[in-house]
Image 1 (cartoon, rainbow, N blue to C red):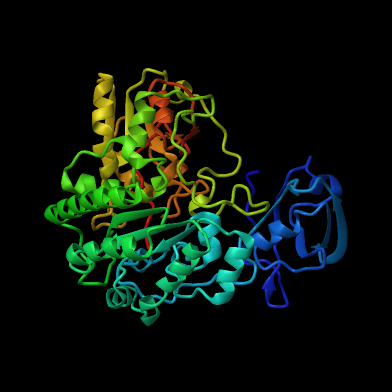
Image 2: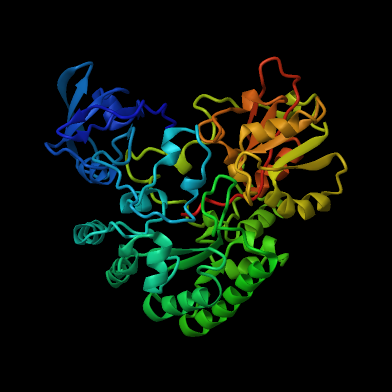
Length: 508
């Protein structure tokens, strides 16, 4: 289902938001029983769910009685289905009571570095373990409670994703600017003791938690949290809008030191635990001018979406595109997909997990977009993506295929990942490019058909072909196969564009 998400917030009943139906599969039990888009679900079997996790448990029964509000009128819809069969409904929110917001004040938080005037939802800082489970968001556990632990364990809410940053109590408290930062990792120990799968993250701030502090953190993980499923070490991102004078980008020497330290500790972990456990983000290898580790060292690519192993996975897909008609490489490593909303019945694909394209976008052939499948091809990408793609494009021996690296002036600073490119910067670069060429744009730049600055592909000076962000899809797009969607501006020239490149999920 690809719902048109209803406007937020929804109706309120007893201080709790009522989930609204935004999509219904007409052939599902709910669709056949008469549930409609726009219905507000007040209770399920007499209970008012507080989030989509509880919702899923309630609708898992064979007989489901829904008290709904439709057009201001209350009615009951009784649904009979197979036990465990999906209800067939998608609702507008993952959390119905209230998102647990973050009460840390981290100097490195990227939300504090956003320009003014963006969508309000982008400024929301969550520290909610439920969103960690559902969408792979990282939580610091500073607002975690005994009741939360009980629910996680009894309902099997695993895996979770935890921002560690430092295992030294004083350093972690100072990093989070929250005295609970010194003690909240006790919940990490409790989660691991109860068999919960946890993936960790360390955002490294130069001069703060690098060097000896980072070494101490890696030692602390081995000593206290060896059951961690994985540990991602990612560099600090600093935009031009940061007001923190102590937060700065890494120097090349600092990046080299992190890469070397992580490599050393991988060997320690391998000897002690039988697995490498910790990995440095691809961005570190780019900053240090070092080659990426071999694909085999990343295991099952569990930290793919944290920018770890992306380059090697992309290379594998690009050079061996054993893909099916949907554009996905059949040999692609099965890394984490950011939580389990895909199987939690009713959970909406929102935020980082929102559909890349606007609802109703239609696929188009690149041959029709650029005047022929062999029209010159320009691949739009961020600066880091260009470094990853350059040797792959060169290996094609195609002078008609070129990279178009785009500087991110919207955020500025050291922000160079493709996923944070905005329409304003892409338009500036495209304005100087010739008409009639095909331009490839990676879908990772978009959420619901919009860039972060609120513009859309239709606002660009040339049409673009939007391509899934994987190597196989890019390879087929270069060869003129239809793998995505074509978006042309009003009065456009008929050219097309498609980009695919390295993206790194914003860490917090």
